[in-house]
Image 1 (cartoon, rainbow, N blue to C red):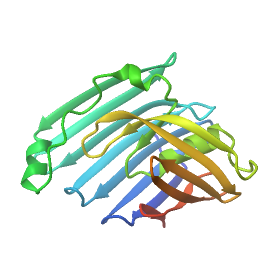
Image 2: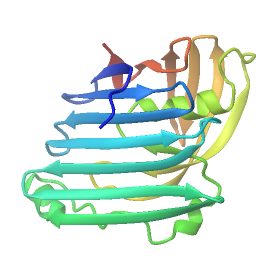
Image 3: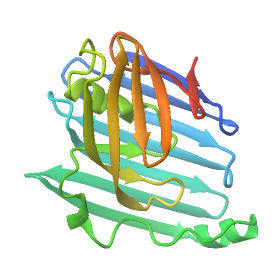
Image 4: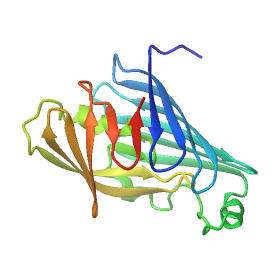
Length: 206
């Protein structure tokens, strides 16, 4: 496995956990991430994210593992279409119910055509994917008020259910991009390369 030149690390602020990504962004993005979280049940999430030179997502591989269960997901985008492949060992639903939560349901999506308009992915709990639309759309240095409404392929964790998500990215100033989904708003503080420094209510970089 090739070594990578950069590392970014975030501490979760909504629960106990961290997210560490090692990456190469010299020609698009190649990143390997390792995330842990306590809620809704303790798990470790490993992901590989690849974006082309325009910062459009090419593929995402994710595995999420906890006590007695493991789920995997692969999302691939080619010629404007998404292919979704999943796997499961053990019983995540049983672990969630034993922990006092509702069952997660099956990973993946039964309607991949609903992802047709998505170019970017959003991995729940991970700040790194927010950089993809920021870089792809040239939001760094764009005039305040510049806004884009996007459809994302949103991957829920730990279930690995994939669903379309309508999101809006709006430039506030040169260091701040507002992220909105339904009634939720967060002003993301980003560095000069578009990587999240602070995601209010979710994570802060260390």
